[in-house]
Amino acid sequence: MQKRKILILAVLCAVALAGCKKRDPIDLSTLHTTEAAEPETAAQAEETEAAETESAGAPASSGLSVEASITSETSGSASIEYPVLSNMKDSEKQDQVNAILKANAMAAADAWPGNLTIRATVESVNLRRITVTYRGSVTENGKTERVFFANTVDLETAENLRLTDLTDAYTLAGYISSGDYKLSELTGDEAVVRSELGASGRTTEYYYGLLQNADFSGGYTEDSDSVSWPEIFSFEKGGVVYVSLPVSSEAGDYVLIHYSPDNK
Image (cartoon, rainbow, N blue to C red):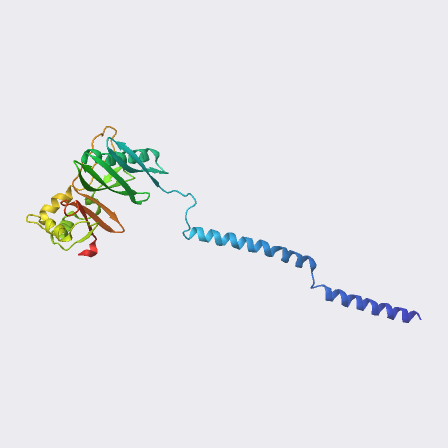
């Protein structure tokens, strides 16, 4: 009887040990830790991806950009629009650039006395420069004339940029005198326009002399009240240089010639 009890006890212990061995690999605490770590790993992956995107060239978070708004001012019988810049990093330079833009635009009232109306278009603006074109009309003694001028200003130096800063004036002069040019904003008779631009004496040297003096010159000065008005204006847009040339009223008062290195 005693031996039988001992045998039964030994069998029970063996079963108990076997059950313990089967449960050893199933660690509930380990399962709980693994499941809790999965959401954290996903969040870390998203953060890593965002960091990689930013370092690969995502837009800067500073949001720094130059903004231009159009304002209007009257001077006698003239109504003239011009741009006003904001959000420049250098506020002093911003004031200087705005002073140049206003002075150049308002000088049109002296260049075209009469009932003058000018509308401004900001062709481009970035951290380095602003390019503005002005179009309108002036009526004097019952005669109406189309008006065009342009202004490009370097925002880093507060100086006017000229045609000679955009392209080689002599090469462009040869392009115009050759007659192999393209016209835009043409309202008059094209044959008349080309006849005038190709008239006797309109040589490469003639146009070179005009182009060398194109556009507003100089930069900001506190005591500068007068603006020298040029005969020729230019601006650059999309890699193309546009030049305004005066023509007769029959030909439309002015025409724009557009030029790029691909033209020649």
